[in-house]
Amino acid sequence: MDNQHPQSSAEQAQTVTRSIEHWLDEVVIGLNLCPFAAQPRRAGSIKIELIPQCDSETALQHLQRLLKELEAAEPSEHETTLVVFPDMLTNFDDFLGFLELADALVDSLGWRGTYQLASFHPDYCFAGNLPGAPANLTNRAPHPIVHLLREASVEQALANYPDPASIPVRNIKTVTGLSERERSRLFPHLSDPDPA
Image (cartoon, rainbow, N blue to C red; front, side):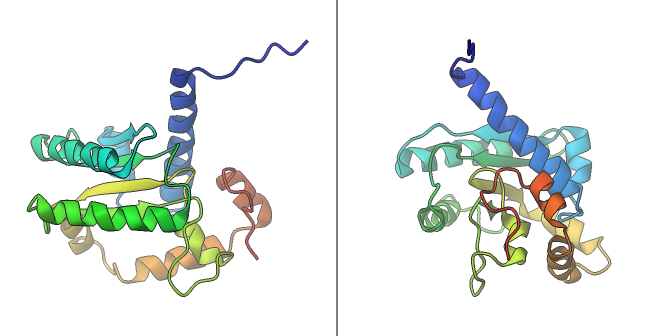
């Protein structure tokens, strides 16, 4: 007899969080796609916040709250926030539309130059790329994510890195060189982890 039961909301949240942590540890840090992520991850200063399904206006209110939390915190305790939308924005075009609203929110709060947004999505596709281009893997994640970053921390990290302009080129080379087995292991959330 099958004794499986539907996951509770708490169990679902744990499953989502584990998938984000796997992606962060194995892809972002493991493949060194972001040379600056390992230190705050070790320090426990990367916050993962799951946003329940809601309309865009409510989602923006959540973003505003999280930006204010970041503003009130010391970077050593809370360096950055991964805002995860596990049950919404699954369409990439809808996600891009929401990013425009989120970017406008940063401006309206007077925080342009203080905070910046990075974005990740299961169907992420860079402008000019075909959906199956391996380069898209650099920004593909288990769920839609808006990453809240401190501008000062980004600038400091880049200033201390010998050749920051080489990072995107190196990242594309890294993900393009993955074997089919490696892609399947690192990107189990993708329906087609081995883009052709």
